[in-house]
Length: 79
Image (spheres, rainbow, N blue to C red):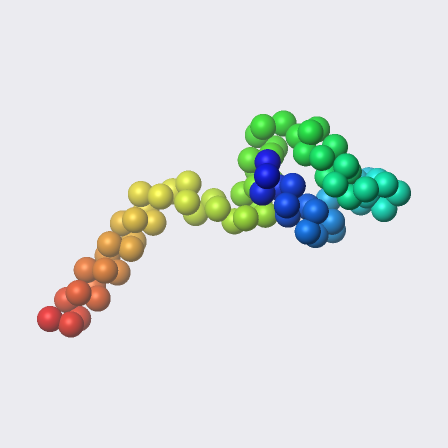
């Protein structure tokens, strides 16, 4: 939630148009808080993944395996 709030406040263009209008008429922080308060848990997680591109970490075993292959390959190159 903290990450989402920071992202929306730092770049209001990420907010939906009606909340951008609310921010222009009032305070950006209040419009951002109202937008986030209306999110479901699932939608807030989806927005966080979209804004911070963390989807590749949800497949962490695959990422670790790829890094291990690179590490082994680099090790054998220098022996």
